[in-house]
Length: 265
Image (tube, rainbow, N blue to C red):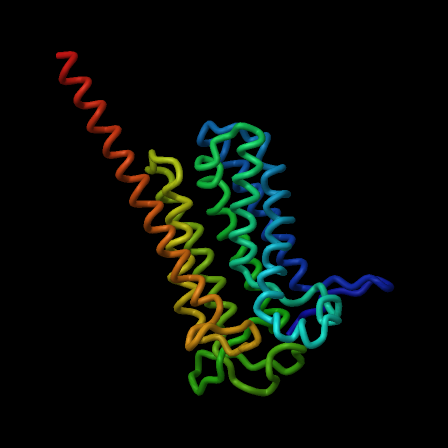
């Protein structure tokens, strides 16, 4: 496709990297804007985003290495052959959340409130990132006879000259919808943490489904499921439990407040 967008001397601007950069910038600007609208201190947002991005990339790389552990044992040189390729998104999500939790604990900030603030922006960044995947040709879909397809002709990742399901564009569309839905729900949400829980649930369901249409099989598998599908099950369950516990806690607090009001009468 258009992996190399521009060359200036020895410097090459790649479409994937550019879309990642646009996604991160958009995520930060939206998070800062929403922080001000919600009455949260916007000053820590930049630091949280930087920490989450750095830890996220490290976590995504680490999980990728875990999925190819057999190859690494056979040839440790794989670890340094191409540090720019090979990431598993779930590793980035998990590492980013843990990093945010640690940052909030150190700075004595409300982790649940800032998680609700940041995760919709993560969905937005993922939408741009998947466009980068499409332009680069990675994360490609399965072969298809459908008219709803894309054919790569000069990709270093996807098979060329073959009609493929446009899994990257579908994923991107789902990510942008995910972002919009979370922002709408967040406007009415009064319980910190539930937006973060919904992110985990929605993303896991979408990722589990889209994996059936992915054609790149180098990301490992657990039985008949891909690594990401296997992880999706547990992340979705964790999100559902988190949402249920927070909602139950909210209901108990509401009942307690009503009891106190009745007693005051």
